[in-house]
Amino acid sequence: MKNAITVKNLTKKYEGFQLNNISFEIPKGSIVGFVGENGAGKSTTIKAILGLLPVESGEIELLGHKIIKGDRETSFKEHIGVVFDESIFPGDLRVKYIHKVMRNVYVTWKDDRFCELIKKFQLPEEKKIKELSKGMKMKLSIAVALSHDSQLLILDEATSGLDPVIRDEILDIFREFIEDENHTVFLSSHIISDIEKAADYVMMIHKGELLFQENKDEMLYRYGIVRGSKEQINMIPKDLIAGKEEGDFGCSALVWDKGKLMNSGYMEKAAAAGSNKPVIDKAGLEDILLYIVKTKERK
Amino acid sequence: MRGLILKDLYLIKGFGRQYTFVLIFMAIWAIAIKATTFLCIYAILMGAMIILSVMTIDDSVSFNRFALTMPVCERTLVRSKYLLFILTVSVGAVTALLISGIVSFLPIEMNQEFGWHEIMPSVTLFIVATSIAFPVIWLKGAEKGRYVYMAAILGMGGVVYAAVKLCQQFEISLDALELVLDTLFVGVFAGICIISLVTSYFISVRLVRKKEW
Image 1 (tube, rainbow over the protein chains, first blue to last red):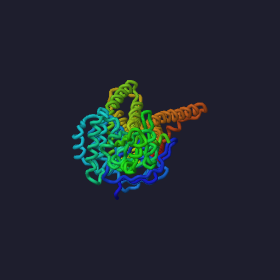
Image 2 (cartoon, rainbow over the protein chains, first blue to last red):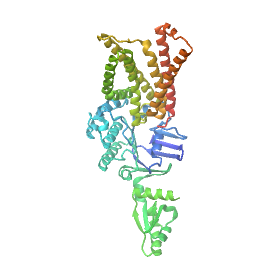
Image 3 (cartoon, chains in turn blue, green):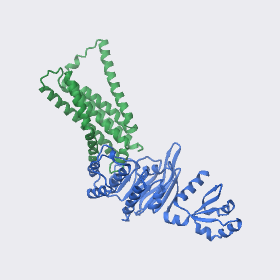
Image 4 (cartoon, one colour):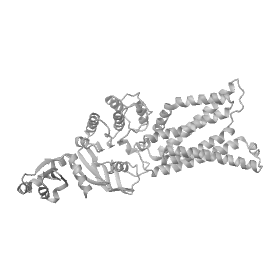
């Protein structure tokens, strides 16, 4: 089994929205960033993966176990840690009670690991959950997710609403977690900078459709933004264009392979067509996603 | 399941002081009006109501959605709440027995004495109302479940009241009920409690399996 998550032809319909025949594979030993705007279908996909939703069609496997809603077999969940975007523990419970509760839920619960993590995160054992800050609540959820035999961490907007310092600390924990090549992190977020820092692969969803799943470093190396006049932009071979924008101060286009564009002789031809040479800039993850989504929206 | 029940017990421990305070207040009031049965029924009602508070708290933080990501299946999740309900009602009943015991040592003559045949109809009312509310809580949330609980109690109370009034109007004597053996009387009500809880449990499991979390 080389994949931590396998999804084939997943379809889930709601009134006014549908997850449309989504298929993807998450390789073991990687951090995969799952991005998309609010309402794109990230949380629905995650809930479907976790068997929290009945779906119209599709096959889902987590760590080689086929997910069926209502399945009584739960032992595979010992190896899955889940963190949602909000605190899921009742506010009146104390941190020390969470420890005692989880010890009785997970067979593979590791007391030492939990104690080590709450010490590292400076979580006061005697405090009630409602007295903790949002960042601390999130750290508690992460500590729980990491204190049993988790091989796969699924995080739904777990870093949203946290300050950059805490977000960075949490991302460090994920990087540490995947040092063992059997461990995988599936991280959904609309904070692109987090994905850019931590992810090995990026997966993008837009209006219930999976747009792409690519290696992040390759993407950042390959994609480029061409800036120039409208005429120069129109000269870019159509098969290289991933997105386009026309503004008052000029035009730009996202090309999915800037190397290929340069090798095609475009720069010389475009320079001859205008008073200035077009410029090719590096594209950040945020640029890539914005160009693609905006172009899709316009279509 | 042990972990889930433990979590609920810790929650109950959190608001236990509040419950004790209310119970002491009600005890003083019940002694003042010399009504032991009233106090006993109140203790059991408190036990029966705890589950609604616990499920409201769970609902407010979507705990059940998280619980299903742990090694817990839908059936276990539902079962843990029914077991907790049975546990808290039992604690309420034991408290009622203790109260009646303590009251009997007081140098006050109470106008009522503890008796299962007097308490069982009320206990049955609470248990049937909770049995009706449980599936609604799972499906629509604890707040709607509370309304259904109140509606069920009012509805059943209304039916009993109407029945008694009709009997009085048509001069049907209810004295025959007093001839029914205590054990049989209590047994019939206990049977109603068991049937309603078991039916409610299976409906809840069915609903939870189909629910979108």
